[in-house]
Amino acid sequence: MQKIACYIILCLFLGNAAAIAQDTSLLKMLEDSENTAENSHVVTGTFKATQLINMPTVESPGKQSLQFLIMHRFGKLNEGAYELFGLDNASIRFGLDYGFTDRLSAGIGRSSVDKAFDGNVKYKILQQSTGAMPISLSLYELVTHYTQRYTDKPYLNSRFRTSYTSQLLIARKFSRNLSLQLAPSWTHYNLVATKGDMNDIFAISAGGRMKFTKRMSLTAEYNYLLSDPVVSSKIYNSLSLGVDIETGGHVFQLVFTNSNGMIGPYYLTKTNGSWGKGDIFFGFNISRSFNFRK
Image 1 (cartoon, helix red, strand yellow):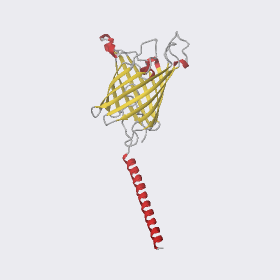
Image 2 (cartoon, one colour; image 1 turned 45 degrees about the vertical axis):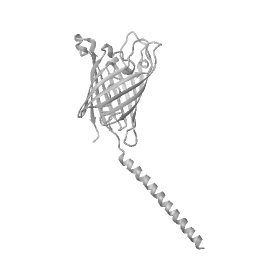
Image 3 (cartoon, rainbow, N blue to C red; image 1 turned 120 degrees about the vertical axis):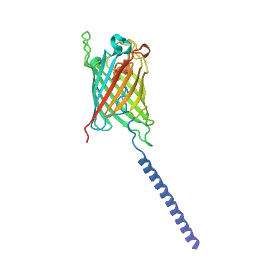
Image 4 (cartoon, one colour; image 1 turned 90 degrees about the vertical axis):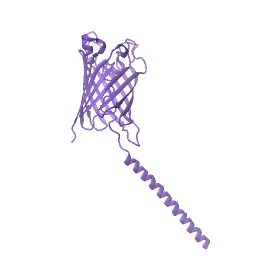
């Protein structure tokens, strides 16, 4: 009888010890989880503007914020002194983008190139955060419609003048000074110039921002076509370099690029300038944000 009692006491003791150990382990896991959540925070300011140069970034206007964007490109530097190295000629785009939430924004724009109108939607799928999410991920959808008149081409109705661009924007802020972005893209044209040209064009873009003072940064982007989309004319990959200057509510960007177009279909698939030949367009981007939230 004493042996049985001792055995029962021993079992109860071991069971309680195991339960205490299990509770302690679960409590430690819970505390570790809470500490990770407390130490994790969303990374902000991956880029200071919604455009890297021509390429959109993962950034978008905040909730109830309206952004006014001016993109301006002069003529080619190799046009010489008579054209004041391109300064006598210019193309421009105006854009308005509004943030419905901190993740969702939409915008419209008008370019002088081909007198094109554009509309876009950007949605931030993932936000980089310390200890949890290593990247930011945004989906960017763009519709472009040009209205340039061609009296010798009456068949160019509304349906044939429209193109579509989709980009997946993948970015990471590696440090306070360095941010990089990768962007695979697809562009579809309802009409192309010849039967040999492609209606669907795929490209991959890469770019980055390196901060070298408190308010100034160097930027660069390269857009690589995965195939030769146009047989009727020579198309180059777009390469752009720039300097960002932050001035309070403004971001001022000085730009050098071989692409005259400033929206998806143009800089991705219609760049006909070559850096080696001096086909370089100098220009600038200016963005100003207006906050309607108290």
